[in-house]
Image 1 (tube, rainbow, N blue to C red):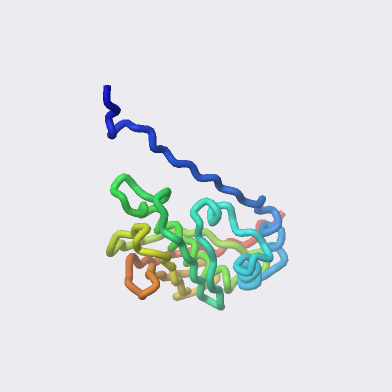
Image 2: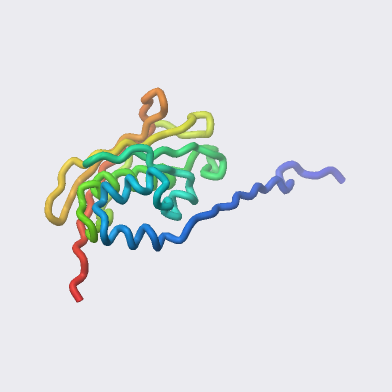
Length: 173
């Protein structure tokens, strides 16, 4: 009996390794956001586990700006044969959050309150490296806004996003 190609076993595997985030968490209490992100980008501190999982990396941080890069790969695909929109959203959200983080003093953190993404073309392995270039639009005492564009090496636009972020003050005990 011939093997049905629709049911053949061609599963692939991927091993993900990461360092415990304790060193980054501890350093965040004593370093401002810009310093912390530069330490991660330079390799002085380990990347967060989610960055290792997806293969994204910080390629630039400066005040009010963060740029993340991702190499599209098959393991990020949806059933439609393109990088899943949730993955692209994660890269955009990370870059926008870090654009705010560059302005925060030691011990202050943030969380995303709202996120809007517009996808304008599909991303595949053939796209090559893509980058989320994020800039802080407004920073108030408790609420900030940011925007990002997802671009390839030729500056072709694949998605754009906006975010509202909440600045979190440390808990008083």
